[in-house]
Length: 340
Image 1 (cartoon, one colour):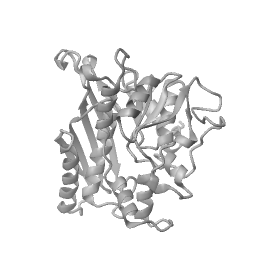
Image 2 (cartoon, helix red, strand yellow; image 1 turned 45 degrees about the vertical axis):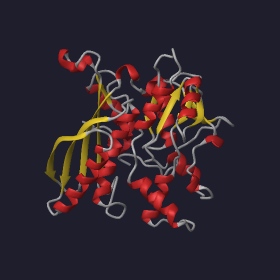
Image 3 (cartoon, rainbow, N blue to C red; image 1 turned 90 degrees about the horizontal axis):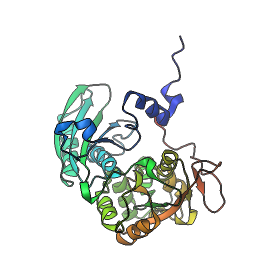
Image 4 (cartoon, rainbow, N blue to C red; image 1 turned 60 degrees about the vertical axis):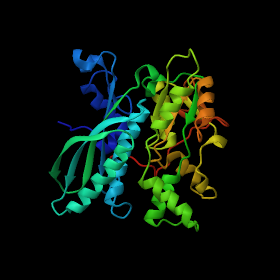
């Protein structure tokens, strides 16, 4: 009997779609899972909605000793999970659990340092370490499950599939700096960079910050009387990947304005600047689709936020298109792919 395609042949998107068949309808469709009254049961607290996310950080896939020390690994693992909570509409974290896998020759000092970085990032956002498990294995990894809480009458969930034609596409900050930091750490060929630029780039790669502040600004900037409808996700897989994800989930095409892409100023003059801005990944900003007046209000209130395009009814060119020529925006062959 044929065993079917490999994970590399399926790709991450199709794998997640297939895994979703084992869960309630729509449960796998966003950055994290909503646990509302239907799943929490009578003791769930009325309209309380919890948000649950699991993410895995694997050695030699997401980090290596050449690019970050253990403290940074812990910080970054927690930040990635909390970023998914923010991308769902949470303004803080309740806490998280950690599954640690490591070879037996791993030192306690490495583990202690990783957990110190993790708890420092977590403490800055009101959460606590709730527990976890550990096991021996051939390579180090941290499997984290994070829990957040939606703010009730002060906001609502952010869902990938809630965009509509006419919405403005908004992002909360510059992109590409993390990819520059990775290039510096790897010793890739680059023009001469000032030490301060290198330091900012490396910090962006090693110590991202989840944008809970952007979610608070989103709620504060909502025009009076406008219903809560926000499509969004974080840009951990890349700015263009996030915009494409929203378009596909919402049955739209995202038209991006080339002159408006949020290029980190440190990338100016680099040959790879546009690719790294669009596809570099691991910037952990929020990419949102909003009703135009709300988008304008958010841009006014939250420094660094800008409109980068808009949503239209689906076009034959695909989910992601340049607005100034109608050309599809393809992913470069070197962009990160799970199971690739």
